[in-house]
Image 1 (cartoon, rainbow, N blue to C red):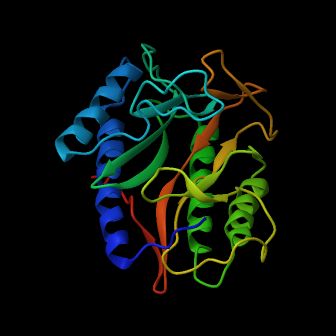
Image 2: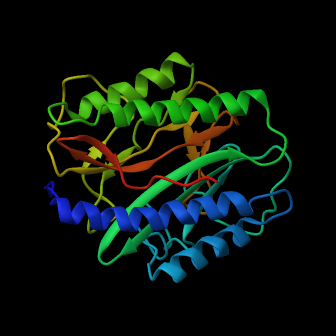
Image 3: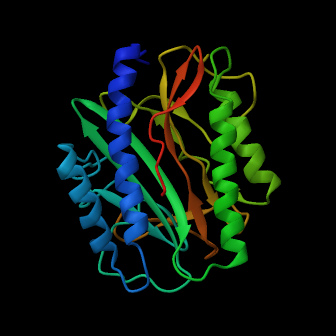
Length: 258
């Protein structure tokens, strides 16, 4: 069942989303050659602590997971697409890092992700990240009252496929509110004009996940969490929590990158 949020609830979700935005900005600023993924997780934990927020990631255990998630961020490096578990790995020059973070504040959740290159970038990685951001922007632009879920999916998929990238066919975005994952699912590829109508008060986490090699295949690491490209190509992930309003889409997890 899809819960429509009141304008007051959307404002409260914006507060949670701003915590997520601050955490991602802090992690991005802290990321550098030689910094470990666990150190980045500690940076995000401190932002959440200072805000009085809790992590919906920490201890989360969906049906596919063998163990509860042990961190407050997902840190996916190079060929890891999503759900990377932070560990002692120290970032190297040229690594492509995707960071996903959530926060719960006063009973409301926010969820967002960003990808970036540490140190010296490869041209191909910059193009992959830029395409992920364009796909996210296209999905957000389609998130308007009167459209349907399929319009968001089609907008995202069209950008990804036109650039020659692969798409995970069974992972995508989702509704969000009191819980991090709510109805409806939001695929990253689909047919326009199909699916649930978009209404004022729906809040969605829109999140393209791109596979650089052009195939759609992925595999799961032994940790039961990390999803990697099967061809060893690099991947990028971009995400915002977005409220659908009569005035247009409202990004609740916007970041200040300065």
